[in-house]
Amino acid sequence: MFLIKKILYWPFINVPFKLINRLILSIFYNPQYLKGKYFDEKLMGWLWAWKGIIFKLLGFNTKVPWPMTPFSRMHNPKNLIFHPDSINVFQSPGCYFNNHNARIIIGKGVHIAPNVGIITSNHDIYDLDKHVEGKDVKIGDYCWIGMNSVILPGVELGPRTIVGAGAVVTKSFPEGFCIIAGVPARVIKRLDNNLIKNK
Image 1: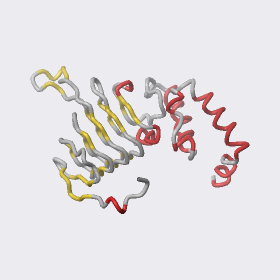
Image 2: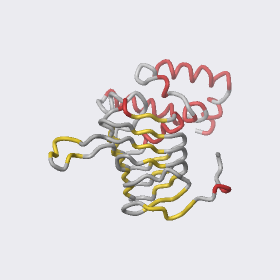
Image 3: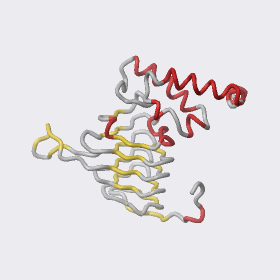
């Protein structure tokens, strides 16, 4: 594998490799999502895209215009905005993106673990067949959402917010640079800005 990666990063092979892949994969995906660090600096994006085609042909996530694991669910791809460097979040199995009538906005360099739920609207408590009006969920740059956590409607997480595994985030933490955990989630630690890399 190391040798294959080395060869693919030689300029005379790498450029045609990317052009040919983009051309073929553009049949299945919007080309604007076939870029960013997972395509330009790494091979993983291309592998996710080719795997995703197989699942699209089998009927999984057929309307999602970017590579996404078949083991996650998204209601409305048009209501999701994300930085290309966060396309990795759609490879975590078991994630649930509830964005019927409000947007989920994901910043740059975000990591989302398996089985995370991001919810923009809930059922009407007086008529369970209806949903209440949705509220946007915003996840800032370089956030890390831990396994089995849930983010509820209207929540905004500022940059560098780390959500502990199993947390239920019911309110916003727009200042970011913190670790939140618990049910409901609360700040358990502030991050030292001097120790942060990739600012």
